[in-house]
Amino acid sequence: MIQIIPLTLPIVKEGDDIANLICEELARKDLSLMDGDIVVIAHKIVSRSEGRTVDLSSVKPSFFAENLAKEICKDPRLVEIILRESKKIVRARKGLLIVETLHGFVCANAGVDQSNTPGHGKVTLLPVNPDASAERLRKKLFELTDKNVAVIISDTHGRPLRRGVINVAIGISGLKPLRNYAGERDLFGYVMSHTVVAVADLLSSAAALVIGQSSEAVPVAIIRGAHFLERGKGTGRDLIMPEEDDLFR
Amino acid sequence: MIQIIPLTLPIVKEGDDIANLICEELARKDLSLMDGDIVVIAHKIVSRSEGRTVDLSSVKPSFFAENLAKEICKDPRLVEIILRESKKIVRARKGLLIVETLHGFVCANAGVDQSNTPGHGKVTLLPVNPDASAERLRKKLFELTDKNVAVIISDTHGRPLRRGVINVAIGISGLKPLRNYAGERDLFGYVMSHTVVAVADLLSSAAALVIGQSSEAVPVAIIRGAHFLERGKGTGRDLIMPEEDDLFR
Image 1 (cartoon, rainbow over the protein chains, first blue to last red):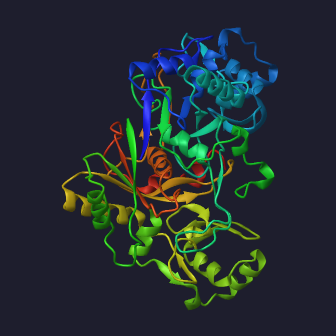
Image 2 (image 1 turned 90 degrees about the horizontal axis):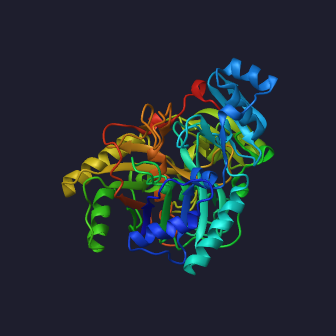
Image 3 (image 1 turned 180 degrees about the vertical axis):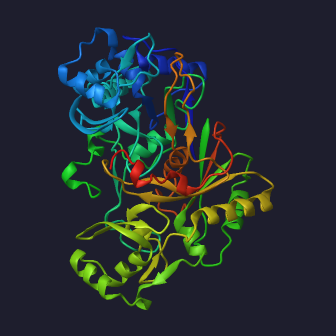
């Protein structure tokens, strides 16, 4: 059996130690981390702890951002921030800006978000390097608990073909994000040719069943009992499909 | 806390009663269904119980299927079956055929699969009407247990933009597949404008952490404790993005 344990944290501010907050909340619940746990963290609190928020009033939009903002009916300062976080515009329509972020994720508004950001007129950006953030948190959790866990930093993404957002992994430490079944036999002896499962995205979506679904602030979930997962090195970038390999594009 | 309980079933054959098999396995585990449980079932056993398997040797490919099969290096009989299950070819390349199925799902090979099908040279198709299958199973489970559960029939899909397959809901009964947060306030009072969460896909991906990950046959998962979900009517088709609304296309 797998368990998904929601953790309610106090509001995270710049400089806060999320690993510490996680351990404190677990102690309050009379729980502790176990080897093999997967700690899924909403990127927003990681961004906030790292000071990745911007006050819109401090932003001077470029001429290009001003024009684009007019065309798609968005705040020009927000558009300026999104463009700074992007390497490519994928779609621009009224109210919508889908870009490829500097990390390589294709998502709306480069992950720049006005919700769940304390302070009026402030927005939260994605962490500069979500894998490095995950690694730092995993090491800190090991220091504090002596337990080997994996850390996933997740974000909520829209997607082609299907309605509604789901959660995906943007930063990973201590876990192989893809599980390759190629060459293994199924129940009836048939050798599977090329099934690669995005386990880190499955874990992110499973965690989203408790993260942010409640009126309380639940930015962290512990997934316990997923013993089949392969430990080891892996990054959030491993999950990005290069455009030339994308069978749907 | 949410629990994901894996169920190991005997190999399902045509005519088998899956609702019964689920209750028997739960009893063996000293468990029983509870109101509010979500029962996620791999489509393959539903298809097999409904007799949706085809013996390749019984198929006579059309001239068009023969030609396409040559071009993409696939078995012409398999291509013939895929085409019969499709309303549109989305991509055809060497070894690859992405189509829109008769239901409207965009996926590889119209869900026609050679793995996990007992008998040599046989393939499994998707259920004819996965929503009707889910409804039938939900009602049967209610008859057997007097418990109100939701049923999701899930499939494994590749997707644009990201590597690896994840699980999605193709048939639903007793659950609203999309949860609309528009107009609700976040933690800091910010009114969210248009966040619609694909909860049925989150549940399918969460269940995939136990379904088919083991060497044993685990085709069913019970998800318990997801109390925030909205009960009510919904279908797998609600999750299909019409091409004209697809912001990524």
